[in-house]
Image 1 (tube, one colour):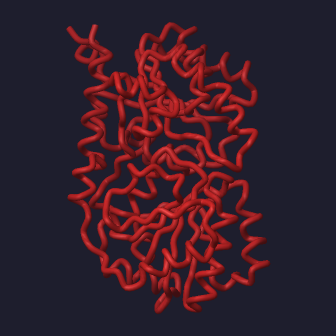
Image 2: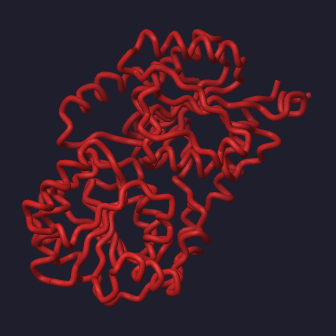
Length: 374
């Protein structure tokens, strides 16, 4: 008899760190919404200093949230995780903390959890010296306490686990899949949102991302200033929040862009906001595989990504990559080349690339089931 048959539903501990409405959190939530809750349930382990609150929607579906000390208080964090993992007698701990997963999986190993998954969603890039030093210091320990390896892309998998592990098929890639129908272009919604935000007649540049060094908002404002210089009716939508949001607001003011840049904060209707945009821009310093890039393409948007974004994110012919060291003028040219492009349906194309959450959730269920049979 399988463990699944005898003990439904199986509770899986998902260690995600801070609740901050970020991309990794969004991906895991998407998977949770689409798995069979009679077979699997998720327990989310989140940091005590998280800026966001647990999702009522997921709680209503049966999810549980456990609050633990952040990694900055490492002894307390490991102690709390070890105790809770042991008390809840998990069969699986799935950590999406990238290189920091070594600590939560050490706690899982101490607690006797048999299946310990290290899941990488990120890489490293310039501009975050201290953070990168930590990543490179911890990278050699990624496999020490893990029994299974996962990644959001081939690129992210090779970065943390090595190319040989990828070639040997040791790393399971779970795409940052989305609910495709939710993002399909709808001209009626576009008109509605543009009226709500007073964007009628505007050329709308959009960006979704946490305000942190990785997302490169400082440069985004520089390149938008160049777009605005060339096209006076341009507007920039910035969706998200974070530690650098204040600095971004100050820079927008210094550049004289107060009337053109909209800081919309954390939103629960990002799917609607994509409809109002004309082009999506992501000048990130590094990415594993950006879920917002997938969403934007599903909405039929032309996209301009930095050269640091993996080419695996190119799911349609509407994507341009611009080197990070390019001047704002070159970015502006790429962005303005998107003027007048028709929004079309790309759902089937994106589905063929493996980004349909309904299909990906089934793959995750199979993955878990194969590790819980006794």
